[in-house]
Length: 385
Image (cartoon, rainbow, N blue to C red; front, side):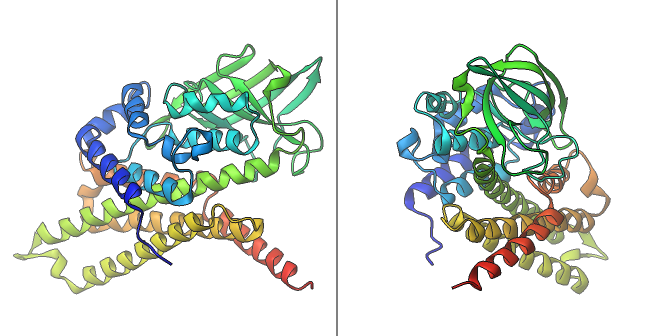
């Protein structure tokens, strides 16, 4: 396998890294991420202008990328700069439009790619425990449209979103994969209540309540009751993006820790000369490279037609990102000592983001169990002629 990025991807990475270093330094980032908006509309538009959003989608849908390595390149750059912009929602909702949207619905992609519309996936619910099929919100037919009722939690940038992709059950019971439908809901729809709040690591999220929210027949994305397959596909793209983002953050945390071990002196010598710390750092570097390999595998597998094989690789990558990311956060702070926890040191913010990435779209325990279950399915398929 050739691990070299194409020239276009290298140029995109160079452009994004340079822009982030110039305009999204840690002090500016913290003002933005912990501010009232949780992101910068002006800088989000600039990211769109630079092609960061367009790279997430294929040319046939108005983008210029859309492959796994395009997505990983963009989000690795975002992770290196701790960028707190609504890119993950753009990816998830945009890919849903690519995979299941009608021509009229796909017109939303133009505004998403241009950075004119913030999109958000409203799927998680209280008590869903990362299981995609645990959907209790309901949608019932009303004339030629639909009425949605229910609650969604931890919706990234949900209060600012102009377009929401909402999962709701049109048949069956929570826990059934069949009977889940997806709906495109305007962010200002009547009957939609939003309660926004700041996230621990920066950015914002919201709790959404749907009380008789009406959408037209054109609000249904894809086929009625067949939303689970689309949810699984777009969750796969989100998992890849989060793993790549974690890798970018790990690299920075690792580099900052190595630099600290070189310059911090104790007993007149750099602490990096102590063998015990060298061993800990060597173990950490090996774990980061394992995570890098997992991201490469996930990027290569994202468009795999074999559903079980694809999802197994993605769960393996998310488990690795969760485990290694938390390890990097803990070890980096311990190797820095007390200074590692201070607000002024960038490392503290990288550590928070690494820990929280583990809890998005399934933590390491969830994906380890899923990896085992998918492996059993794979073995079962292979045992039949």
